[in-house]
Image 1 (tube, rainbow, N blue to C red):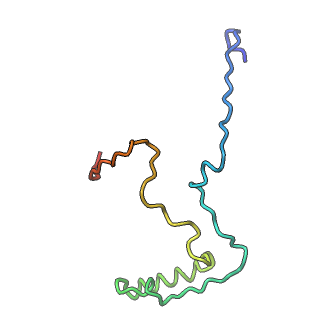
Image 2 (cartoon, rainbow, N blue to C red):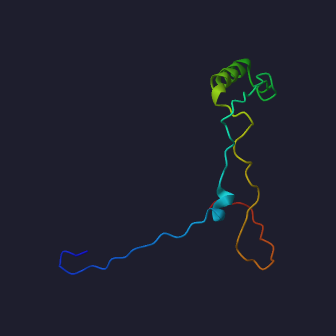
Image 3 (cartoon, helix red, strand yellow):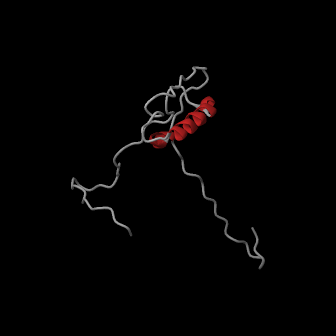
Length: 106
Protein backbone atom coordinates (compact mmCIF):
# COMPACT_ATOMS: atom_id res chain seq x y z
CA UNK A 1 0.00 0.00 0.00
CA UNK A 2 1.45 3.39 -0.97
CA UNK A 3 0.42 6.58 0.81
CA UNK A 4 -0.20 10.00 -0.79
CA UNK A 5 3.39 11.04 -0.05
CA UNK A 6 4.74 8.10 -2.03
CA UNK A 7 6.02 6.20 0.99
CA UNK A 8 5.11 2.60 1.52
CA UNK A 9 2.78 2.31 4.49
CA UNK A 10 3.01 -0.50 6.99
CA UNK A 11 0.44 -3.19 6.47
CA UNK A 12 -0.89 -5.24 9.35
CA UNK A 13 -2.83 -8.45 9.17
CA UNK A 14 -4.79 -9.74 12.12
CA UNK A 15 -5.38 -13.47 11.97
CA UNK A 16 -8.58 -14.86 13.42
CA UNK A 17 -8.42 -16.63 16.75
CA UNK A 18 -9.02 -20.34 16.74
CA UNK A 19 -12.55 -20.83 18.05
CA UNK A 20 -13.47 -24.25 19.33
CA UNK A 21 -17.16 -24.98 19.72
CA UNK A 22 -16.45 -26.91 22.92
CA UNK A 23 -15.55 -23.57 24.53
CA UNK A 24 -19.02 -22.21 23.80
CA UNK A 25 -21.09 -25.36 24.39
CA UNK A 26 -22.57 -23.93 27.60
CA UNK A 27 -23.87 -20.90 25.65
CA UNK A 28 -25.61 -22.83 22.88
CA UNK A 29 -29.30 -23.66 22.77
CA UNK A 30 -30.37 -26.79 20.94
CA UNK A 31 -33.87 -26.84 19.50
CA UNK A 32 -35.81 -30.11 19.38
CA UNK A 33 -36.49 -31.94 16.14
CA UNK A 34 -39.77 -30.49 14.89
CA UNK A 35 -39.98 -32.53 11.69
CA UNK A 36 -42.52 -34.99 13.07
CA UNK A 37 -46.04 -33.71 13.03
CA UNK A 38 -47.01 -34.40 16.64
CA UNK A 39 -50.03 -32.27 17.31
CA UNK A 40 -50.25 -30.33 20.53
CA UNK A 41 -53.56 -30.69 22.32
CA UNK A 42 -54.25 -27.35 23.94
CA UNK A 43 -56.61 -27.12 26.89
CA UNK A 44 -58.38 -23.77 26.84
CA UNK A 45 -60.10 -24.56 30.13
CA UNK A 46 -56.87 -25.04 32.11
CA UNK A 47 -56.02 -23.01 35.18
CA UNK A 48 -53.62 -20.82 33.15
CA UNK A 49 -56.48 -19.65 30.95
CA UNK A 50 -59.39 -19.81 33.39
CA UNK A 51 -58.12 -17.54 36.13
CA UNK A 52 -60.21 -15.63 38.65
CA UNK A 53 -58.06 -12.54 38.10
CA UNK A 54 -59.22 -12.33 34.45
CA UNK A 55 -62.56 -10.92 33.46
CA UNK A 56 -64.76 -12.84 31.03
CA UNK A 57 -63.79 -10.51 28.16
CA UNK A 58 -60.07 -10.89 28.94
CA UNK A 59 -60.45 -14.67 29.04
CA UNK A 60 -62.27 -14.63 25.68
CA UNK A 61 -59.52 -12.48 24.13
CA UNK A 62 -56.84 -14.83 25.50
CA UNK A 63 -58.55 -17.93 24.11
CA UNK A 64 -59.07 -16.19 20.75
CA UNK A 65 -55.38 -15.22 20.58
CA UNK A 66 -54.26 -18.74 21.56
CA UNK A 67 -56.49 -20.31 18.90
CA UNK A 68 -55.18 -17.86 16.29
CA UNK A 69 -51.54 -18.72 17.13
CA UNK A 70 -52.16 -22.46 17.62
CA UNK A 71 -50.11 -23.39 14.56
CA UNK A 72 -46.86 -22.12 16.04
CA UNK A 73 -47.17 -23.87 19.41
CA UNK A 74 -44.37 -26.33 20.08
CA UNK A 75 -45.47 -29.88 20.73
CA UNK A 76 -43.28 -30.67 23.73
CA UNK A 77 -43.36 -27.42 25.67
CA UNK A 78 -40.62 -24.84 25.61
CA UNK A 79 -37.82 -25.46 23.11
CA UNK A 80 -35.07 -23.92 25.20
CA UNK A 81 -33.67 -25.27 28.44
CA UNK A 82 -34.61 -23.44 31.63
CA UNK A 83 -32.33 -20.55 32.58
CA UNK A 84 -29.40 -21.27 34.84
CA UNK A 85 -29.70 -19.90 38.34
CA UNK A 86 -26.73 -18.53 40.21
CA UNK A 87 -23.54 -17.16 38.80
CA UNK A 88 -20.53 -18.97 37.43
CA UNK A 89 -17.36 -17.01 38.06
CA UNK A 90 -13.85 -17.83 36.90
CA UNK A 91 -12.12 -15.39 39.25
CA UNK A 92 -9.86 -17.15 41.75
CA UNK A 93 -10.94 -15.91 45.18
CA UNK A 94 -8.73 -18.41 47.02
CA UNK A 95 -11.59 -19.96 48.97
CA UNK A 96 -12.98 -16.71 50.41
CA UNK A 97 -16.75 -16.29 50.53
CA UNK A 98 -18.26 -13.46 48.48
CA UNK A 99 -19.21 -10.21 50.16
CA UNK A 100 -23.00 -9.93 50.26
CA UNK A 101 -24.28 -6.48 49.44
CA UNK A 102 -27.74 -5.19 48.69
CA UNK A 103 -28.51 -4.07 45.16
CA UNK A 104 -28.29 -0.32 44.73
CA UNK A 105 -28.52 2.23 41.96
CA UNK A 106 -25.28 3.52 40.59
